[in-house]
Length: 141
Image (tube, rainbow, N blue to C red; front, side, top):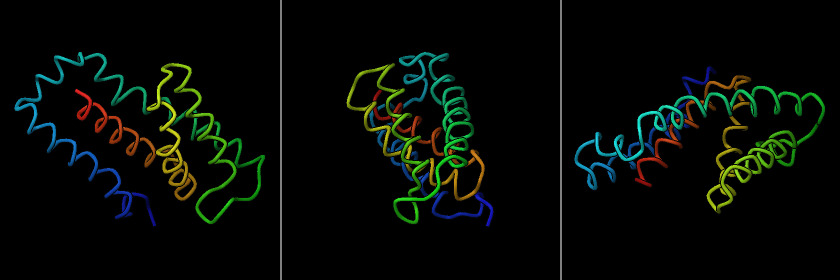
C-alpha cells in the first residue's frame, strides 16, 4: 500500500489541523492576524522549511543509518532505530529551546519514524510534521 492510500495517516495529518483551525477561527476571525503576529518568514520556516530539513536529516539520513546498523525492535511498531532517532530529535529541539514542549517532540517523532519505516520514504513524515507545526502555531498564537 502506498502512503497516500493510508487512511490512518490521513487522519493523523488532518484531524489535528482541522481542530486547531476550528479553535483558531473561533479566537481569530481572520488568518491575517496570525500571520501578522507570527511574521511571514517565521511562518514559512516553521511550516515549510524546518519540517522538510528536519525530516531529511533525522528520518532520511539518521534513521536510515541506524536501521542499517541496528537490528531488532522493541515491539512490532517501534524499532531501536526509531527510538534512538526520536531521542536525538527531541535533544536537538532542547538545544534550541529548553522547554517541556521540546521534550515532548519525542512523541510525534516516534510517529514520524513509524511511517518512515512503514513506507520507506520521508514524504508522510514531512506531511505529519507540517501538520503538527501548523497545529502548534494555530493553538499558540
